Length: 297
Image 1: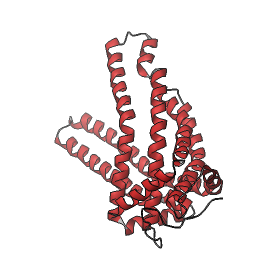
Image 2: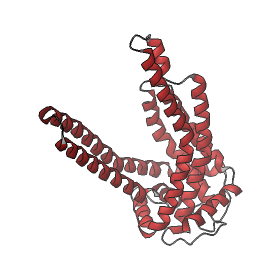
Image 3: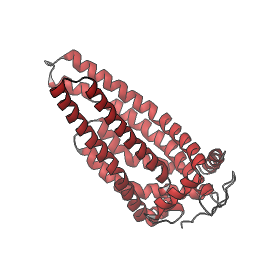
Image 4: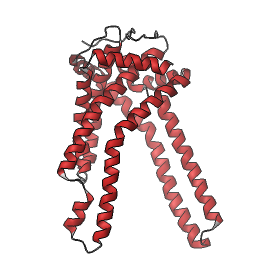
């Protein structure tokens, strides 16, 4: 299976180049302030940090993709010097590609937002004029159907453009050409890309499960505590029940950085290995990663 072959190439590159995990650690540390402030529920600051992260992350992400390219390529070896060299060289095209990707995704969010507002308004109007009943049920199902179609379209678009970062860094594509290359690769390799995407999805779910599960549990616990306290609870009590304690924030942040170090590094290397194996004109790399990629000095 093609997805498994590329997986072996990625794992082999990681085994020969543990320095890749330092690149993943750097990415985790860059995202850490945003996560910590979100857990602490500090107003507005997480959004500001998200904006800063959006502009800082491409430097290190491009560097990690370049390192992964060297690790799975003909050289078979990489170093942190590649991260900084590729970060400087590929920062602008990578950032521009991220902005284009954001522009592609925003309309889906707007469409779902408009659909939600229309749905709430329509349901409220129907309930006020007809008292609900079958007609309102049909309307709700119709809105859910339209929403499902929008989400499906969003997933398909993500599926088609998912390799644009690799195209920018290891194939010297510009911001627009990177999406074309990703589309052509996926269109020509639908089944292998589905297999690849399943492996990526499973890896992401495993990564997210511990943190998401704990946050979900604590949110339910906090809600129950606030309900038990009642409306007469002191403001300090309400605030304490709404957020995470400092030890919890520290523990979740540490776990997040560790998971980012391992999983982001793996997914980046796997994406490069798969792209190089299936990109038009590229030779199929064997387990030793015999393929040609740009070198960064």
